[in-house]
Image 1 (spheres, rainbow, N blue to C red):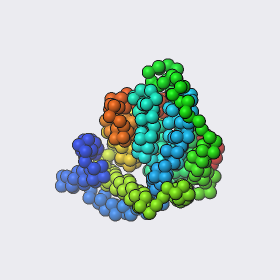
Image 2: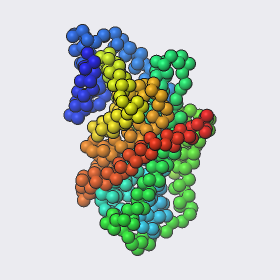
Image 3: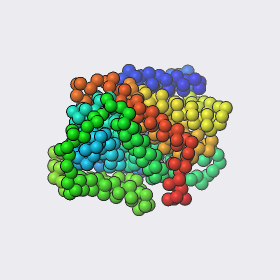
Image 4: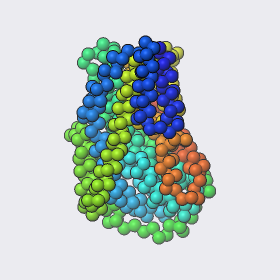
Length: 457
């Protein structure tokens, strides 16, 4: 009945394409297949007895407590207009230079990624504030749209990232499972903090590659951006204003990441500090009221509920998939590939990239990664390197049509004179840049592993 596991996976992808809710699709379709399997004698119903303990484990998972805290932190910073102040200051700082506005967008996107980690909030904020200004100053719609969408997705790879929190939890379980399957009964662990450290160098590399592309376009393409600094003669920036907009988020970033990197706090504890710090920052700038706090808490609850509901649906899917023998099928397929680890990683990376066209990163993290990660880790793949490779690959899912969420976010706030085709054309070079980073990390894994090895041995 192993073929039923394959059919189940593709049926779920098809139902998702029809627009049904992800969590209900995962749970409902899996239970229907389980019922068919029980009636036909090809599925052992005892697998479903593990569901209550799975649900309880999800809701009491200490690592996943960081998710609502980081979400709360990001939404508070969005509501307190930190992004708006940053963008105005950076635009005034670099505005007198050619490509200055685009450089400002990339740098502000990097800072927002390190302080909020929420792709939707960053893309919407940057789209509302910078896209009209860039179009007014002569930037082409495709280039401006691509720069905003791509920099908005930096929150996927630059810590503290919600994607890395979710990946870290999944990989931790997969790593322990892989070691137990190899007869190691005192297994090592991999934590969210390890992924945060491993993501620092790749995240900075991606920012540098974005900046290099922006600067190259300023010299190579006359139509992409304005070539006259006369448009920016009004951009005079006073040092106090720059410091007042730049220092608060920087201090918050240093406190959150510094406490994790220094070993003073776990990611969950650091998330609590970050959430409280963001609230204090908003209150100090008089940007928080009771009504706004209510909005922040309501939005945090909605996003957190969505994540946990998808996780519960993914747990049902994984149990049914295992009950049909799907894990053994995947393990045999990847293990028997000619080329060993290289071929297995190549197939997995291609599969994740293609699935990114139709699935969100949360679904891929909870549905696909638990299936393929134990196999790759059993073959000897470094867990931190695997986590960062998956994170960079999943970042492309926000930019790849037809279901790239960053494209939807920007389309919702972009002016009418920006066509959807402009947005698609604009993100294509940035997708290629992300693929180039993936290739670089595959060739030189020490770009990921060197910093964790140096800090933690």
